[in-house]
Length: 496
Image (cartoon, rainbow, N blue to C red; front, side, top):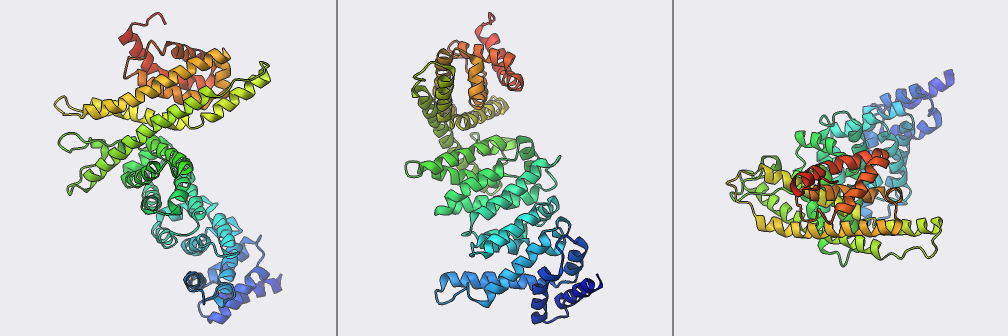
């Protein structure tokens, strides 16, 4: 025991500020040999004595040398001293990161941005170990808090490695979002979260190479854990309009290239649906005839810049809405033409209908975008003064396309009911499709009575789902209540 303590003290002396670089390097090599990774006290003792600025210097020198080697073929990084030093630094950090309590030491937390850069550079062998150490450090909420309280170093690292491995960026952003979603009040860390996500969103908007397509899934995974309550809390403290502008711009650029980027267009639609779900007032920001936006749209800055941006977002949202209607109908068409089971036994029928549902995977995404717009436009119109000159023509044109999707949705469910003859089986097979359809048609029927009579069979199905659907049935009842009340008052269908 005494000998071990002596070794620890020797290692600590070698790593102290008073030591030379050679002595510090010797101390780093000793760390894995003399420090028991299960002994948090020993790890903390050595880390407290260490001059971590030397560790940072090794990381930065290695990054600089590797970056130079990628543009200068005469420079070999893998066989260089800098490569060896970088690997030693990363492995030492990983040793300390193994113990949860030691991993939260500010001396390690200050290395996060440099560690991120190493992980993002895709340096053979070394980047994998850097990503592992980063993951261990960020496994604790206190490390995520640190990032969100001090986002600037990581923002600079993200900017510096904008052409690097997007998996590292995706991991960090998703971890921060999961942390935010678990908080009772997300406002405290909202500024840091918005700063990080806005940087990634700007990279997505500006990229014109493969990075743009990689960032689609990075941003979708970042926004997925956040719910509407979190989004509202975040926006109340740190406005998210810049995130919406950048993501909207990037998504619509991909959607316009759909014929060439079909796979990524689907991913862009998913990402855009998150914007609609989280910040509809920013996504659908619309100005009146005087150029003054609704109070909640956060537009119309004194210099007119945000006003122009709001106009761009409006055009992009109309494009995305039209594409959502088209893609939604395409999903319905695929489900409609899916052949029925050749055999009529229950197992064959279930297999065939499950295949039908898989073909409609995109419908909930499209219906979600359209539902978000219907909710928003209804509220926006209600907020406009009677004297306001609303662009009715533009809204009616969009309504026409939404109506086509609504009619196609009703027809599909009527057809599907005739095939299965069981609302319960339909709900078991496709709860997500049914919920998204009910939400969409519930909002549509509450704004336009034209298809109420055509939708009566669908409303009848909803009644069965409400009664027999358990928790899903409760959600369906919530979605349908406004339209049922509207239908009873407007169309005289009290016999229901």
